[in-house]
Length: 123
Image (cartoon, rainbow, N blue to C red; front, side):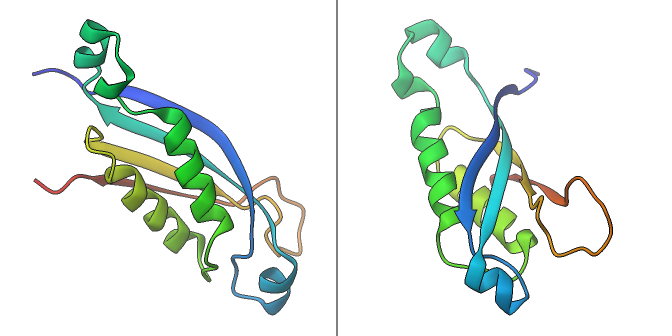
């Protein structure tokens, strides 16, 4: 069996208004997302045609639009919305999404808060 090929996008950034607290919804902050897509890239390698793979420029625009879009309380919800959008690209078999919230309202020093999920296309 063929191991899945991977396309990775890291550090997609957009300003969003996600969070449980009023000041997060009012002031917003920068979020970033990392994606690892699983798909078969052999058709694209054979044809050398972007139509046979995932256009990662279009994918990046779709993901950053979600980050900048309708606010949610939890980054878990934001992860799921991103995963759903990625799986809407026909060639994607599965995706791992990490959303980073480096300015989360935590009262002790920290580098990052992130949630990672893995979702696969329903069989």
